[in-house]
Image (tube, rainbow, N blue to C red):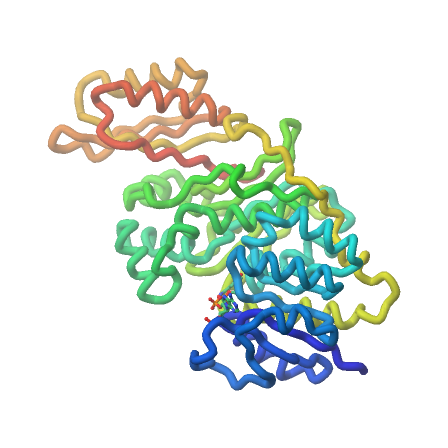
Length: 422
Ligand SMILES: NC(=O)c1ccc[n+]([C@@H]2O[C@H](COP(=O)([O-])OP(=O)(O)OC[C@H]3O[C@@H](n4cnc5c(N)ncnc54)[C@H](OP(=O)(O)O)[C@@H]3O)[C@@H](O)[C@H]2O)c1
């Protein structure tokens, strides 16, 4: 079999794993690797020369497939575009570039007759992309919901299991290497938004522009929310959801109360878990490592092997090119999202508070499933409200009304419930 010539941009965590796995495949020839710092010690013996000039790979006519594992928006975007222009196939793990520039990149790849593979960009080692793209081709996808960020899942699991507050759990995650020194992208939900953008393209044919995706991070969640959730039969998880309904594409990143019996409630630590709902298959759950050197390299090298197996076939690129629109999706108004909610309000323990909370909710057509006052001491109390399903807009309006009240002591914590069927 002829050897396929590869170039690789980046040799960090993922690139190192790719080199380890490629050593087991002698039909794949890695010709050159581009890095930033030529003086850096590498964790693996390089089978080829290194360069600090990525153009050497992009301009090399012998390189057929460019693996991009350098990350970040630039210069990765420009290099990928140039490589496509020179008719190289792309294998990338870069969720940020795909989420922000997917429509343009897939349009360009179709024009040039090349394929873009991106299994590693969502859920690391879990073969989610190929499952949706090929395995579920006979289905109309109804929804994709998942735990798509291992860092926040690790933090939330620690808070729940050890009763730690958010800052303590974050610090521990940083010490163990699960969270970066600047954790903003993970804890504020940007990372999940990128992944949801890509999943929307696969499931519904259009990328969701990341800046238009509704996002709520995990920093406001406190240890007592896990205790309250457990008493009602739930666990708290940061979920990414994308689903099409009559109002358009609903795509959101938000911590949810997940019923203890739901498959996503069992996804603990740094793992990822995804439930895909297709009209024919029903619900399909996948759980596994969403990051790490070898799990992510497994997805990257799997893509390369897939590409290799088809390279000689006529017009093979079109087989792998997903039917993705050249424009971003119009997202539904986040206020239209209908869900039951959990609300924790920290209040001054004065007579009539519960009645006034009930009135504010009633003013915005919110039915209450239960309302409980907890932990009253030293003139303070926690009020926990569980509502029936209602548009998020109504919930926001009720909270705004309550903010005018003197008895409210702190920001309300408002989390939707993942219903067994949602
Ligand atoms: N890490 C994971 O578990 C994981 C999981 C899923 C997806 N991903 C995605 O995989 C990609 C790579 O992640 P990673 O964790 O492997 O990153 P990383 O450890 O930071 O490695 C990045 C590599 O790219 C090189 N690089 C950066 N800027 C460069 C430039 N301007 N020119 C040439 N080389 C450059 C760096 O060179 P030096 O080594 O010289 O600094 C380094 O080798 C990202 O898109 C990430 O989102 C990662």
